[in-house]
Image (cartoon, protein in one colour):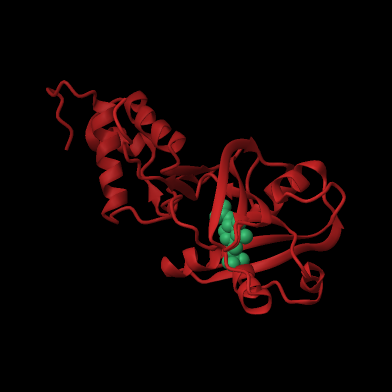
Length: 244
Ligand code: 16G
């Protein structure tokens, strides 16, 4: 119930209440949320108040609307630590999802100046680029384009890429990812990226660029990943260093 005498605005109380129902499973993922009218009747509040609570929850990605059908509960976001060097396959398995991969592009090409600089190789050196759609329980999560350079890299062109790339690198090339540098920025997904990730126009996505180094500090991959903003939240634990 909402408390009309509380200093906490009614829309915030309703928002909290709906959030609790989502968290404790009373409102399950993809379950229908009562409409503005239903909420206003149920809690004896104005439709404006109900709308404000719903709008904020939609903006925060907790709920989504489906035109003509109503408002529904979004899937919870995957909390991904950005402190340990893991692979997509490991991350998804650790969460109990079944990872799958759809190969979009596999080619040998020459390194552009950006890629060459990241991989510390001369411009125009041969690289193998692998673009893959990564899915969890059949739902597209990220689109990753990895450009790789190391001794014998062209052998990748004749291998399967429907599983873990890091497993292939370990088993066939003895390459162990030991360290990585990641950069994050928000971008607008391109139409083809939206189509592959099954996103609507204007959906937020996060771009992550990773340069990964092997055991002797040699960069062997530069990966650009487009992650669905509605399904991911990246988490870092920060420690204060020294006196400020
Ligand atoms: C992660 C990495 C990506 C790496 C891939 C290997 C980020 C942002 N990206 O998705 O750089 O190539 O794992 O995963 O974390 P795999 O071994 O399952 O193919």
